[in-house]
Every structure is written in C-alpha cells, then in structure tokens.
Length: 195
View 1 (cartoon, one colour):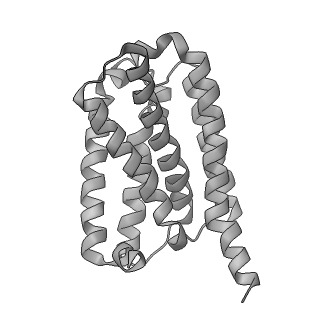
View 2 (view 1 turned 30 degrees about the vertical axis):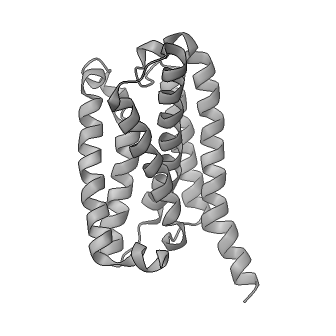
View 3 (view 1 turned 120 degrees about the horizontal axis):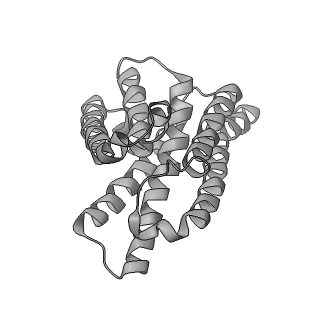
C-alpha cells in the first residue's frame, strides 16, 4: 500500500507542490539572516529549504522516470539531518524558555515530516558510494561554515548553547550520512546477495 502511494503520480505531484511551498517559505524564513550574511556563505546558510529543494528536484525527476543520484544523496542526508535538527532545536527552545509560539509547533511537525519523507523514498534512489561521499563532504562542510564561521541559523534564545549545538550537529551529520548509506547501499547489496 505504501509503495503504491509513494509511486502514485497524483500523490507525488501533491508532495512536490507541498515541498515547493515549504521551500519558498523556508527561504523567506531565512530572509533577515541572509541580508546580513557575507555573499560567499549564502549557499550554506538556508539549511532546511536547500534540503527540501534537493527533494523537489528528486521528485520532479522521479515523476518523469529519471534519476539524479547526487541530488538524491544530498536530499536523503540533508532532509533527515535538518528535519531532526529543527525538531530538537524547537524542543530545546521550549525547555529553555518554557514557551514555544505556534510557529515552533508548526516547524516541529513540518520538519519531522521532512525527515521522514526523505527516508521513505530510499528504495527508489539510485545512489552509489561516490554520491554518499560527495553529499557527506557537503554536509560536514556546511557544519564548518555554520559553527566555525558562525553562520548557523539564528535561534537567539539558544545562543548560549552554540558550542553544544555545534557538537550535536556534527554527530547528527555523521548519523545522517550513515543512515543514508545503510538504506540506499547496504540494504540493496544485502538484497542482491540473497537473490
């Protein structure tokens, strides 16, 4: 049933539209930070919308029965990473301040869904090890830009915890890369060996 839904064209088209809207909103959310970001760092600042942009590109090609393995690798890794990251940061904001506006709950729900959707399409990705390596380098490089050069998303209430958040984010990146490898390469090799 799930396999049918994930490949049902009207559903994929709806998912693409939802992700396009979410991507546009995500870039708008980063607008004020992008205005003060040095030009060289701009591609690395809007984390979540760029992750959903990768997924939009995948969905478009999926609809026309084409594959873009590097985009697929970037999508699964960054969707999971930034989906989980945003959920954790909003929960941490609630713990630290005792309050979370409705937008925070919306971000928890949307980013949780973001993390899940990238994993659900793992059986359809045509990723090879080289794609995981390149996407992994992009992801870890992004962490360096965020936490060495100070370009991380602005959560003013959490600024006192930037070192701890940077440490958490690094390990979340490695976990995301590992999950992407496991779901797209390891499991497929295992199935092929059993045929």
